[in-house]
Amino acid sequence: MVRLQIGPVRLHPSLFPVLWTGPSNTTHYLVVDAKLGVVPIPDGWSFEEAAQLGVAPMTALQRLHQSLELPSPFEARSTDPRCTVLIWGGASAIGQYAIQFAKLSGLRVLTTASPKNFDLVRGLGTDEVFDYRDESVVEEICAATWNALDIAINTVSEGKTPEQVTSAIGDKGGKVAIILSYESPRPTVKVAFSKLPDVLRRESNGKCPTELLV
Image (cartoon, rainbow, N blue to C red; front, side):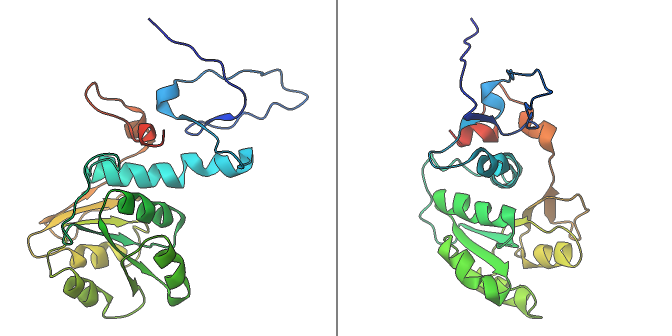
């Protein structure tokens, strides 16, 4: 049985291109699989504000719950203070959502930012923030994580960041979720890179990240 639901324009296909139905366009309806990216626009949001839901929030969810395989925010939360994630680039669009989703999952969140954005990322829930331009930033992160950090998200994924984020991972190694593909500088640290088709692929016994939004 296939269940169909007709909704108003307030249902936004966040993973798909927005179709502008102007005077010269005869398109009136768009048919999509609801489980692949249609979520209600929150009250008080404009269509334009909701259009970004398919970009930064989805990428953050994908990196946390698909690449790093962390539990959903709706599952049991960890109370271990050592259950820590590093989000490199916390003031970026992806970083801001990743901080909030990670806190909802009960994780201790460390992030990097410029000093002018320290208050911003703290307001989003960051437990500790480090100046990414500080030459000792990696050493400071290692000290703050007892040299035992094993998961991180690199929201920049270029320049010096592959080496910096990998170096912040503890001696036992771990995994880094990345947004641009690169080879890991350390054999004991895996990098996890996924694309939009990976989000759209549903598994019979699991959820795609969009289902965490509703």
